[in-house]
Length: 406
Image (cartoon, rainbow, N blue to C red; front, side):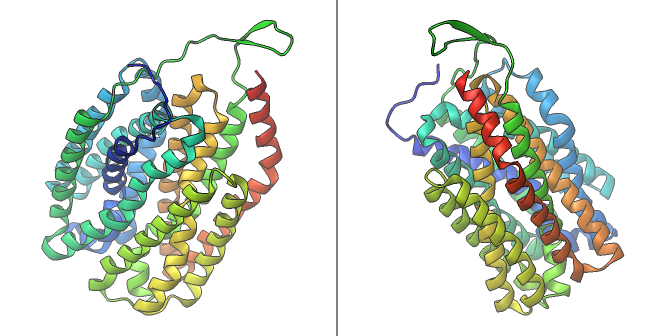
């Protein structure tokens, strides 16, 4: 079936895709809410368990682009179903892992599926809707990622605290299978292929062949933005459970409750991105970046006790919640149609580089300087991303405009 856009907004199909994204992101961040439990059971340090996030993310980094190139001719729908099956298997292997090394190997398997999944899922959205609906559509599907932090991470943390961290992985595997079935039933097999040589008419009426993709400059600028901002965010978020327990003074049993409110606030940020992202894309993104820096600093200063921690960390989550959708929308708008699969791989690689690097740097800060310093280092890295956006904005717009002419 070819991609065809009409005036109808395919909400149900987008929600199914959002559900697939939900289980994908939940699988990636599942260890975050259970760091102390996994560390105690496997007799390793919390910073070493944090490296499970790094292992997953860096696997995505090295595999996303090559796997995307190798599978460009394959049906997007079939790939989504296959990759969800691999996610389910990786969670089962994690649940039965007898030691840390086996658990890390299961994360590598999950990372291989995750990178290609995002390279396929992001551009697939653009096949379902018209360009003027793209920001709204991306916000719907990205809501699956936000829901992972609202329900996925708190839900698995609650299961892990109640009956053991291994059962959290079992529950996640079951959810993955459910959404794989929904994907088979609900999503269309759209034709994603674009001719290698695209013929267009210039203003003078001559026909030219577009051989070089100038949009890659704009996509690259967005990717660097993602790398900086998401590294800062994940530098702190990866160690949120030990931080709130040891620094904020929140009881172990209340961590899942705090994560629930954290996720809800992220959904509010995503909603704001969906409402304002199409009409005021630059202003919305810039305001969220500033708010993210400020809110992380406020968290480090004032999040003491359950209620203050919930309130100030909700500000942090709301500030970050809409940024992934805005970044993805900006990259897809900048990319030429023939390069959208590659763009998906580039943005996925940037996000997962940031996730892995953030977890790694956060672990170093934790071991060398202590948990209390983590939020301030995170805020500094995000601030660097905000400066990068301001410095490169004209260059990004120029590259985008140049490609649009051709």
